[in-house]
Length: 159
Image 1 (cartoon, rainbow, N blue to C red):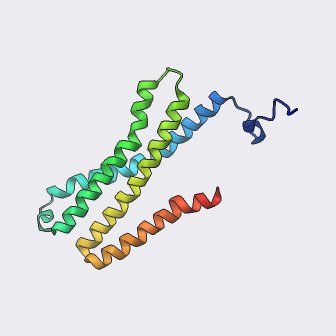
Image 2: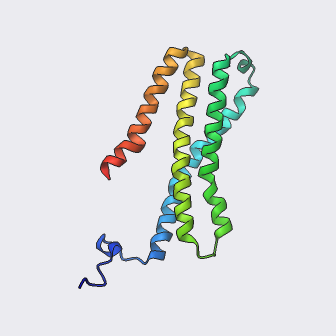
């Protein structure tokens, strides 16, 4: 019969209760979200100011469509990456840390997907306005592949 101390969390070197593990997971998730939230907020602020620039009136319909798509992706990223704060406020002291960690982790994952789409969209838009569509497609495509490789494939391979 297996020793009671051979639970999975103890075999991995951590001697913590499930509650302690959820507290640690929550703290780690908040640290990750702080980095992503700052980036998405800066990008969102930048995108929100663009239509009020005089030069924006001269962009093509395709560039306007790219702008709107990028703005919407950034809004969704902002929604998902900041939502855990609201969830925590509502669920605070209700003994629901397990659920809070699970839903917040899912929201963070969705938010990161939309954040990389936003960054690629913003890079695409800038290159399109400054250098033209061929450059925009090349650089935007390269960044899309780079984000997928670095943010998703590399950690999946290390798993």
